[in-house]
Image 1 (tube, protein in one colour):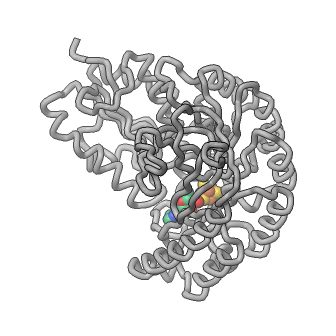
Image 2 (tube, protein in one colour):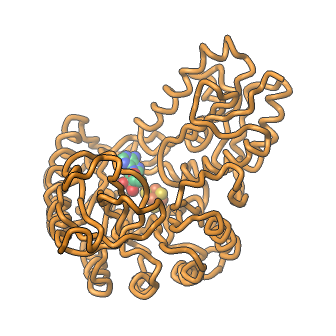
Image 3 (cartoon, rainbow, N blue to C red):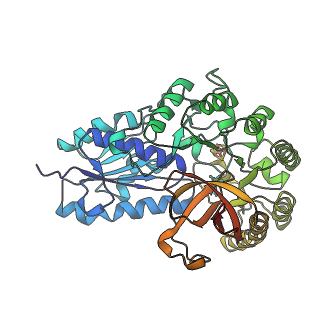
Length: 455
Ligand code: 5AD
Ligand code: SF4
């Protein structure tokens, strides 16, 4: 037998891709290939791709391009392009990657096992980019479950019907569809029984969960998940400002396992640009939503996504975004330079902003945000926070205090989604630990276990 029985999966992109890669790992495991971190021993190499921005797409081609040579010396190596770029490119992918064996679209996962069998029996250049109204719902495979992981993603819906004009998601992930609540709860129960303490529920727009299917709404789903015994924390992403309901805000306030953090991508602070993006809300809507949120949930942290340099964005529009960031003071942001995607309508919009100007605006925005992030972090100094321990901390700044060495330094995440480094000799991954925050910087927080040094 020429196969050694290992598969290497390289994931690019969002949390949903991380989740999808685990599903692909489950299928490969059933076919006799265990997931490995060692590329050299793999018989199957999968790149789970992202097409949200040009750079991500290029990463996929460059990763898979590396196997052209190896395929000549090891012809039985199975190479797979999966996910969004695969869906977008279809058989065009072979033009740049003639050595690819399988192009597996976002909705073809249920057929991946068959395709692997076909390639093993000699077929090449398989393309499956068929649409599907179903969601691939395999339960977590405990055989390839990394027992160290205490926090897992769970996709509750796929696709998107919002058609923001810059975005490829509706074209590569298909129409929005939600899983039924029973299968979601069952999946989380399976994860919890394997030691998972925290789940992040994923969808492009979780606020519209279940509406099409006339299932329970998202805040009701949260209530159900909140009842799962042994689960400690619930997170979710992403929320769309146009659909954020008061019911969800109340659920965040009242359900004890739902973390006090909301990721609410606003994209821009200019009404003109928001309209051109087809976002369906105004800057006033954002301000009143965040006020309502902060009124109900005192401890809430809020993060966002911003795109700079969208076609026709003037300095004035950009300043509107800067202004809004100053007004809201997000805990953290992800900011991106607008990237032209040929399948999205904005690619054809006039007045594209030049790359240099986009980068200038991006840097200005990020620098400004550093102040707000630092301010929010500094406000935590002296406060007590509860963190879920994620692992050993490799950060050096501020460590080694009071004779502690690096090996004792651990890292955990607060409910508000901030990472804290702390000395923790006796703590285990997965513990919930109360920490007193000692120091804060723009990109890190440092704390001590409660009672450790306060004599
Ligand atoms: N260019 C730049 N950023 C984009 N995003 C989505 N599409 C694009 C694009 N074409 C950003 C949005 C979204 C995040 C996941 O990626 O901010 O919220
Ligand atoms: Fe893309 Fe808009 Fe859908 Fe988000 S809501 S996935 S940005 S189309």
